[in-house]
Image (tube, rainbow, N blue to C red):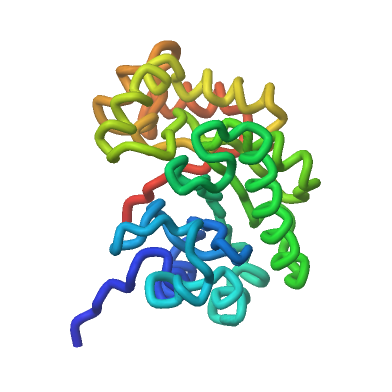
Length: 245
């Protein structure tokens, strides 16, 4: 029998992944009626903004966060085997009119704060080992929202900042200067200053030619580059994606 890869961010994909790897990452968006839905892109395949649709409308496009937590095949490895779950909160596309639209500001903070409170409400029903849950977001207002929500789990802001609008290529072009300016040691220093208990980073900081583009100390996963990483990290946790098999 041939194996068929499940849909990204689906209950099937995440329950499969957590049984085979040390942890998983999932993306959450807030539906128009205040339900956390697991969806990466700002629009559905029908080009409708996720945040403008109700949970019932989204049922044919994605699964809810609560439906994932109902699966013991997902929660038990998280609770009993020390598996890690990284939760990325997605901000709405400005064109959707949600979270303050193009002006964002205080409304965006309120939007993310609501999401974090909902996440915490769901997780409070589970007995999770300390440090096995991580929340992060590219939104510059995320840490302010986490403080306002009194979110009890480790959290950090993702860098370099990928804005909510534009195609993936344009997003990376705009983020390139920030990537180049922050070597991984610099990135760790910034997160420590922000009070984050860990640093999330892309694999490009550690492997391939891209790590040589960054200003500052270059680190890697082999030889002297690994020694330099270990020396600079000083035990500071790092969450790296994507993983290789």
